[in-house]
Length: 293
View 1 (cartoon, rainbow, N blue to C red):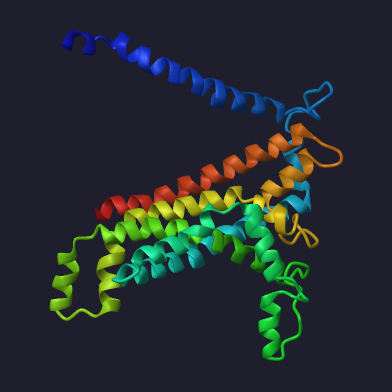
View 2 (cartoon, rainbow, N blue to C red):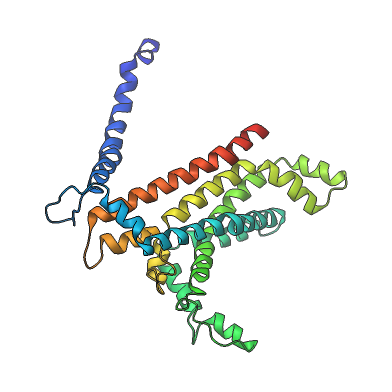
């Protein structure tokens, strides 16, 4: 048995099937897509090689540049508004002794719902005439607001709906890290006279920094690939105010005049953006985390 385990061919027999599947379903599609990004293929007819024309066309298009800015809005909202709220609610639920399981289940439910359901639900909430949000505002004498049809409010409305869907998932992750902190640590701080706010900021948050780092990375990745909530709620409108790179890709690659090669080039740009952003985050926050450890 020991001699068998020392034989490298035995390990190769177990690794090779997985490696073949990985190459077949990941490496090959990525390589072929990268090739089509340099062509004018529409998905049906013959194609011709056009070099970097798809990439220059994308960056010269003001609609695509606007989509990049909107993706940045998603990232900034996720990191600087959504993540602090996630930490706040996770700490709050962690302090609750009774019905804690109920609260965890309640906040987690939106994340298991279909995005189509979320979009339709929030579309009704934002409905100008009969939506409950405008009904509530009318009590205070505020005129109806066209949340998804007004360029001033459309992006904020979509950001709120997207945050409502995914915050519960991250809250459960952070809550698991909080509950893993030894109880003696908080009890010792309480005996020393630390207030609840001091314990949260000076003990809990520093001890859960690794999971906060994971949540931030997942939030950045999610902000770069967000598309379904956009297509369901606004389709990128009004006037492109909620268009993101992924919805721009869908509209160009699968629209009235499909251009698969151009859409593939957009997908590579999205991949490059996500890779650079996560690498920058790892080089800054990740390095500091390692230094503190």
